[in-house]
Image 1 (cartoon, chains in turn blue, brown):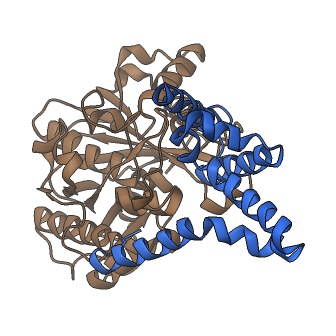
Image 2 (image 1 turned 180 degrees about the vertical axis):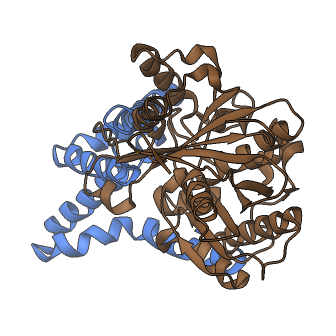
Length: 116
Length: 339
């Protein structure tokens, strides 16, 4: 059953992006940033974690989960380290994703040359 | 000689003594492949950058055009060229290799007919004996400049158009054999407020209609006087709009073969080109490759090419401005045919 919910929830998030792109004529960058903000706001209401429990990768793979991770990290650190945690916590949870992007981009640039 | 409001009539009949086209792989898979002088199998053409590849296309097309004209670059007096890149670098760099007095122009995708009209005016007025008109575009340089980096792989709506990779050049002379340039109607800017750069055909259609109507008003002609009238790159969305606007304006456009270079250069149903072709090279390769060859075979006597251009810049688009559009029409006649 989780597979079906992952498919439906993940698909619905992607459909939201497609509507922003095609109907509201948003640029790819605006579409992505808006989805990140939506994920962050949803986590602010404590609703993203239940969505992940419900739909698994359907909620963690789309870019909205990045917004969720930013807020989640900040709030978790706020409780353990105080106000400074809001700053330091943002990158604790997301560091794996950001580092992976940098490292794999670097490795790819050794093999192929981006032509723009 | 000015006729009417905005049409130059070339009394001395400047002749296109040589023309050439060079294209990329997608155009080579299209229905007009046999009409091009050279088809590159790769988009990069073994160059280090897309810009260098675009420049190479132009250099090769001008070289072939000179060969077909049977003259040497030292005999050529002026080179009139333009392209889509910032500061029209493809033409300026190609002009550096050519070593000929150079007039750079910008008319976006209308450049093909803008340069042909200017080169014909030079020859007709006696300012030159031999002048070359040339233009080029490359799919990847245009994507990079006007849309997104090529490796970004951004989605495109079906109204978007596919920039033609290619170059076309024509040598105009005061005498010689070949089709001659009869007249040219210079268009004015028409902007009806369309802001979507992925729907340029619809934005440019009113400009094409304005120039076609001005051409008929100035010359007293009707569509039936032409064997074919082609627009530059209105493609699948813009061309039917232009036909509709002309019909509503009382122009009997159905009396001629009314087509569009952007629909002719590709097999729009089979190739992944969205609404059809666009770019400076679109009307240039169809006119200098396909249409002039059909003229030489005697299949066409008189044609009107209405090259359309969307004169936006990436900056004007980002600042939310609408797209100013233009179209220039040039009438070309088969040699020996009276005006």
